[in-house]
Image (cartoon, rainbow, N blue to C red; front, side, top):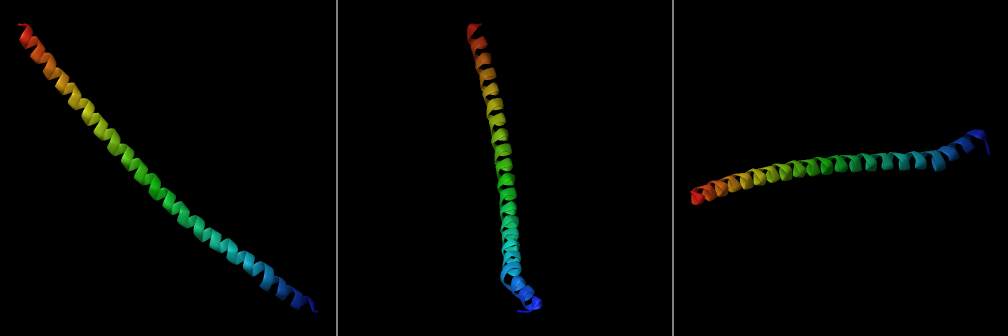
Length: 77
């Protein structure tokens, strides 16, 4: 067996499959990274919407209690 034949076999049966596997894993990792970023953005948007709704509800409750305080004062007079 010639040294070039051995090198050809090493490249053909070891290096190329490993390189193909690494390339495939790189592509999958990039897809997963993109999916994770999308999920993070969605979670952030949901949290912001929830916080906004919670603040609106708190403001509404404050207004209701202010009105109730006004009614209570009017009834005490």
